[in-house]
Image (cartoon, rainbow, N blue to C red; front, side):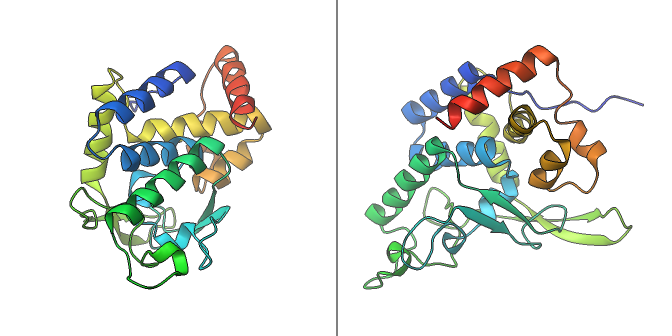
Length: 229
């Protein structure tokens, strides 16, 4: 059986380079930096990132939520789970993108002060022309044998791959999830926590994300600590 190819796990220097070059070269830098941050700091899949809404990250008062509930209809595994907006860098990127949307009138409602004037049930992440990102319908078989249709945002996945390529890094949208899994394991030492946060049903699936050497785990631990300072 051919071994499944794994996405590259970025080290701290590579991720810094990716963000720096994206800020400098992307036409929609605030949006693209946020997309990358969401993958690396919450472990969200690219389609989950494309489908969360303004109301998922903001209270009606405009205050940021600390916890994002990923609905069953949004996740690839068709199981609800939570993602957490706890990284300072991620929060700064989210605030910058929300301000960008307000300034450019992207998905705003005139005269409404709730949700910072943004339409709550519109996607958080918009395409370059202010439209929702396109979704492809796919079908997968769940662990219990049930077949379910789900949405996949192939266009955003391809765009993220181009961001990596522009930065000279052979990564993909899945690199963020793999790096996130390693950081969680390094900071908690608990594979069950990794499984829950990634939304996997089995530990075997999660284990494939963190099959790394002790030296790399030590580096991840140092990075995880630094992220929370």
